[in-house]
Structures are given as C-alpha cells and as structure tokens.
Figure 1 (cartoon, rainbow, N blue to C red):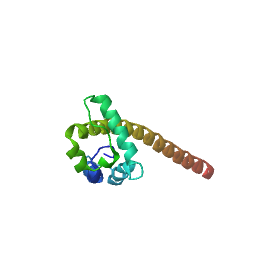
Figure 2 (spheres, rainbow, N blue to C red; figure 1 turned 90 degrees about the vertical axis):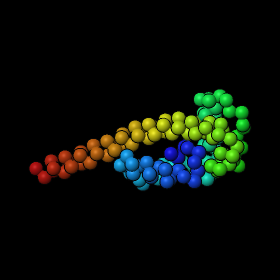
Figure 3 (cartoon, rainbow, N blue to C red; figure 1 turned 90 degrees about the horizontal axis):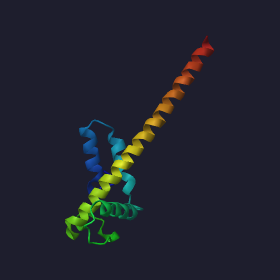
Figure 4 (cartoon, rainbow, N blue to C red; figure 1 turned 120 degrees about the horizontal axis):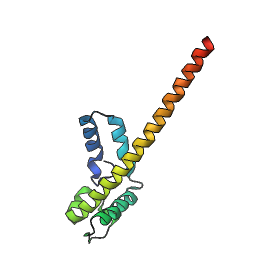
Amino acid sequence: MGCLPIIPLQTVVAVGFAFFIRCSKIAAALGTWITNPLYAPFVYYGLYLVGRMIIPTGKKEFEPEDLTLLNLINIGWDFFWLMFFGGVVVGMVLACCTYLLSVRIIRAFHNNRDNRRRVKRLKRI
C-alpha cells in the first residue's frame, strides 16, 4: 500500500486490509512509510516510470508538485493509473522480497534460540 499514489490514505487502507486478512496492523502501518515526505518524489517518479513501461499511453510528464491525490486525479486518470499500476507492480515485488527476507530472519532467530536451549539443557546433564 505504501507504493500506491493515495498519499493521505495509505496507512488507513493498509491497516484496514491488515485487519481484513488478520495480520499485523503495526507492520502494515510501518510498511506505508516507504513514501515518507523526504523521498516520496523519487519513489513516485519511479512508480510513474514503471507504469509507463506497463501502459505506454501516458502522455503527461511527471511533475513532483503533483503528488497529492486530488492533484493526480485533476491531472487526469491516465496519469493516476500509470502511477497506480506502477505502484502495484513495485509493491508486489517489494512485498515478496520483504516476505522472503523476513522468513529467513525469523527462521534464523528460531534456530539460534533452539540451539541455545539445547546447549543449556546439555549443560544441566
């Protein structure tokens, strides 16, 4: 959700979706911080470029001051949809990478904890 061009609604939509699929609301809210004000223009420019690769009909050039939802809609739905589909593609790739990395980190944590418990039990014997 953090990669979608719905700036004022990202956290609300992410937490609502997390509630619906019964997963961590905190993680969902934190995931939307990828588009913080410091580098949102760069993220959205990248989404625009990815969207243009998917839908090559976009004729409007990107302007960083057009980063609010209302401005994007006023510019035109074609520009909004370019960024939206770019955001969906980028968001899905980032979600898969984050999932795989998280699973790996959690498994390593659990393995370390199990090894420490085994060593502790062996020392008692």
